[in-house]
Figure (tube, helix red, strand yellow):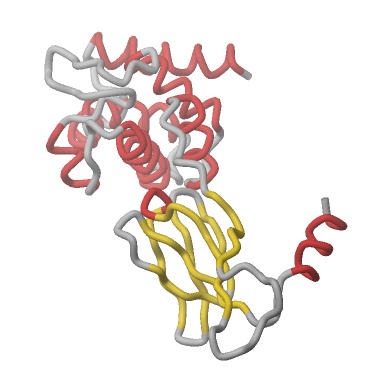
Length: 213
């Protein structure tokens, strides 16, 4: 793989310029790029531009019209981007890595919440795989009906709750209880609130997690 990459790099024409082609049809020039989760970073002398990966169709190289080229194509594709996955388990793996959580932990929450169902709606109005309430999704800045944003929002919320209780010996249980019933309920009762639903929820997530491990 390293050898192939080196050969490919040596074959790139020195007279070309690199461009990112967007869905809008715009071409953005860059020196190098990198992919971080759902984002594309374009680096150039002018700085770094952050784009959503879903907005980028492909990367191409175009010849400099001021330099004569013999029998060279005007445009050469560098990389064709695949659209970001929307398969829940794959998105969970991606978002867990992005937010530094064990994939199996996030997966256990998703399994308990919705059985990974994108269109699941709870009686209280929670939406999708991670069962985000509309108000919670708004606070997180995500669209709960978009599977990638839904899972990212839920994963970020889990991470934030774990950080909130990081110095507590009952950190994980409190974080899960807060995910289910809200941090206010956890604060009110000093731990997992005496709600049957929440208590069963916490135990089920932990059981799923231990089973997955």
